[in-house]
Amino acid sequence: MPWRTIVQDNTRADYLGWLTFGAPASPAELATLAEALGVALPEELGDLLRETNGIADRQGSFIWPAGEIASTNRAMRTARHYRELYMPFDHLVFFADAGNGDLFAFPIAASRAVGRDVFVWSHEDDSRTWVAPSLVIFLAGWLSGTISV
Image 1 (cartoon, rainbow, N blue to C red):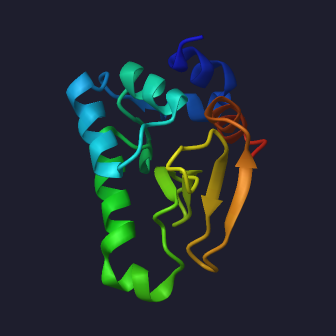
Image 2 (image 1 turned 135 degrees about the vertical axis):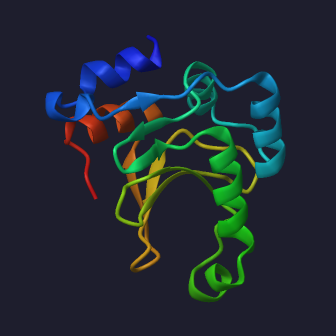
Image 3 (image 1 turned 90 degrees about the vertical axis):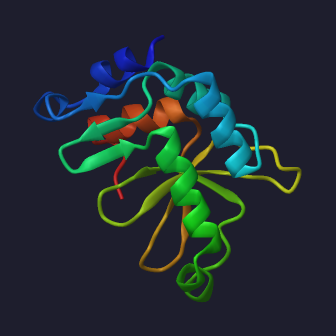
């Protein structure tokens, strides 16, 4: 099922008009992203970015475009203030923003394989909490209001 259809079918009516879809990410953008992350992209995330390079709402990017995924992960992994305040982020691929400072991510296993599960990182207490078994279920739950943080 196309990602735009998944989003439109699961978004609360009052929120749907606030969403905008980016142009598809190019193969070069996706290759650059995978190289920047040092891991292969999760299949669902790659599929979503090939269809729409990010989804924005009235607050800004919700599902980040490829360039923002790369730059945010780079900053989270290397910025001194993050390294001093929080546990390492090398085992996460951040891809979305909750709008309150919390970020959504896929886990990276020791084997460097990226999992399908979606976790939320809390900027307040540095917890990493499981929220959904896949990007499809995460999007459907977040946009319908059945998943919240």
